[in-house]
Image (cartoon, rainbow, N blue to C red; front, side):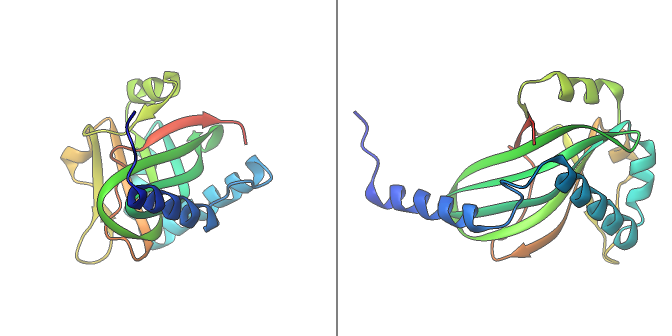
Length: 185
C-alpha cells in the first residue's frame, strides 16, 4: 500500500479548502447566472481588448469561462464554469478543472475564452466526453500597449485561447492541461 506523506496530504487539503472558499459560481442557481457572467466577460473583452472582436467574428463558436479560481501549495487545482456559445447563443454549459503539482503557492482568479476557428475543432470539442486543452491550443497575447491580439498565423489555428483578468498571488495562468466537461447547471 502506498502511503501519502503527511505534508502532501495537508498541502492538498489546504489547496482544496482555499479553492472552495473562492466565489467561482459553484452552487449558483443555474444557467442564468453563468449567462450573465459570460455576457459581462464578453463586454469586458470588447471594451478593454477590442482586438478580440475580430477573433469573435471569425470563430464558429467560443467557450467563455468568466471566472477560474486556482489555488496551490505544492499540490494545486483550479475550477470554473462557463458557456459554449455558437452564433452568440448559449448551446451548452461546461466546467473547467485542472490539477497541478510542483513549486507553487498562492491563489489567483482569471478568465479565459477559447475561440473555435474551425467547424471540425468545435465538433470534436462538443462530441468529447471530456476535452483536454493541449499543445494544439494557440494563445493570443498582450502586446506592449496592453491590447490582446492574434497574429495571422495564430488565426489559422483550430483553437485560440485568450487568458485575461489575472488577479492574485500565483504567477502565470494557462489553459494547457485543463479538462472541460459538459455540465447541467
